[in-house]
Length: 274
Image 1 (cartoon, rainbow, N blue to C red):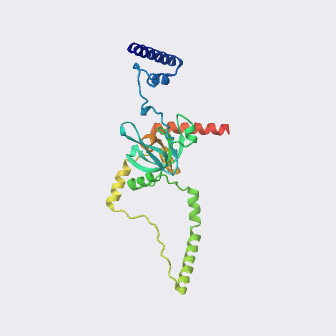
Image 2: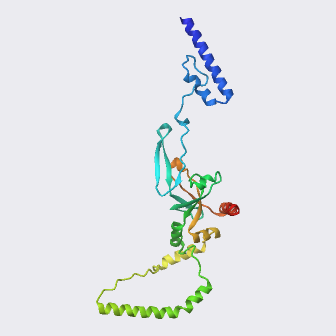
Image 3: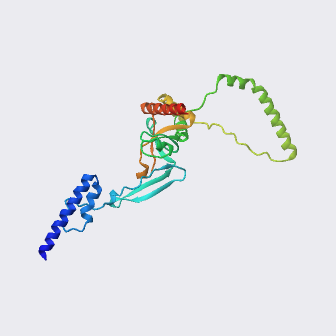
């Protein structure tokens, strides 16, 4: 009986190894990897591996740009936790040359070097180029330097037109104010107080501080033009499918010029095909 058992063990292990080698030759390496463990054999395999949790091949997050923020908690190897972002529309973006970071809205996905399909489906991944809202950085710049950046300058022709029509408008305003005063005077109604927003007066200390900061103030022309449009080009530096956040940095210098050329070329191709 013992002799028969030994013979069975030997031949069962032999056939399992032969089947494993055949599958490796055919290219079915994953099946060959787990074959000896799946078969009920007494002989241990040379390559005995359990089906581990980290080899599951989990579905990608494919984080979408949406106002309905959705982040899932995922338990991973070792009892650790990952945060799988499914839908996001905000993130922390840093302005490197000014050393400032602000939380802002992500408005659009405009470029992805790996796949244009990710741009069409508005998928947020690491390395994607997006457009973010410039308002938080605009407010910080005004507070820090006392300069309203991205403001469009009025043309000389428009100023002349305003000066020519200023006399007529002043007379109309005075007449209108007189009529309103007479109306409230005889009807007895109370006039609602209208608050006029005026620029807050700054102390001498604050003015000196702003003037000192303005001496070293430098800004890239391309970034200033983007502030005029209210949108800044930025790159995503975090991994939304792993950490649940979509943070990044504003493009500047050579990197900004490179991606602007890419976007212009993309627009040119779209116009030619249309």
